[in-house]
Image (cartoon, rainbow, N blue to C red; front, side, top):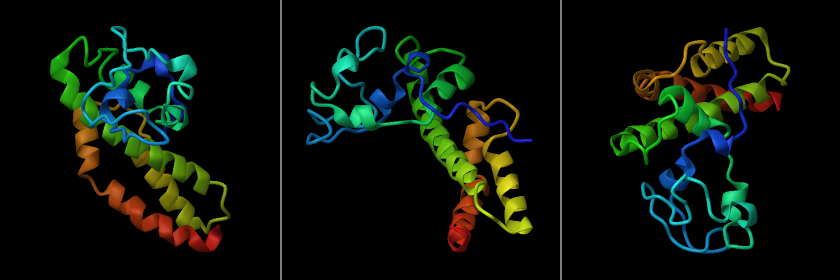
Amino acid sequence: MAHIPEMESDCQSCAALCCIALAFDEGEDFAFDKPAGLPCPNLDENLACQHYNHLEDAGFPGCVRYECRGAGQRVTQEVFDGDTWRATPAITGPMLEAFATMRRIHDGIELLLVAERLDLPDSYEEEREILLELYAPEEKWTEDSLAAFATSEAPGRLAKFLPRLRDFV
């Protein structure tokens, strides 16, 4: 049986993973360039954004629109037991890798949940349910299980399944 996680971001339960993992390109969405893998200079010592309550006015509407679908807090709380890259710098790389994989997992879960609303033939519904169990297992994710998922057949299987739904949309 699939275990559907919280699918909305909870910044208070995250280690500001989007603020370190993602690159910013100066323009309409971001006031400056920031390469992926470096912390945003707007983060304070507690991993809170200094502009959180006025991001748009500060030139960061891209931050307002970004939604990790719960991947950030899940990596922080479930995979790394509440630890942060700032408190334990040695986990920065593994945490960013886990975040990238978890974002793909949560994107897949969202697509599979949307597909549930379609009038699918039984064989398609069975495949959707199997995929959902692969993307949302009952067991907690670990660094190892995330790494194994990234190289498993599941992402390719989902990529082949989704175009087949075109006729049911």
